Image (cartoon, rainbow, N blue to C red; front, top):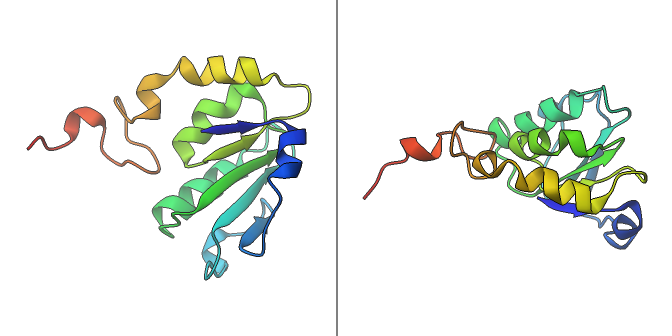
Length: 131
């Protein structure tokens, strides 16, 4: 997962192929034609609807583009964001990038789906067919 500060995010400007979804919108109702990046907002850290949106976009809509978490994004949420299908997290201004990197490094098994499946890799690593 790519981690960005709010300043770095400004350089990661939205393009015409970016869709910004409010967290109360059902992802099933949106056309994804020509969309390569979707930004999902966490208006406050305790509002988890963007987790559900990310999961639905990956699993039910087969969205293969970039999913970006914006808003009130805390380092505590990063492992779950990664498992829900997010590619990029824009941290809240008071959150440390160094701490965020340590948090993600603490969960290497989740990053590759070793113990449980996730939004992008359904089967855990030990269930994959060996050839």
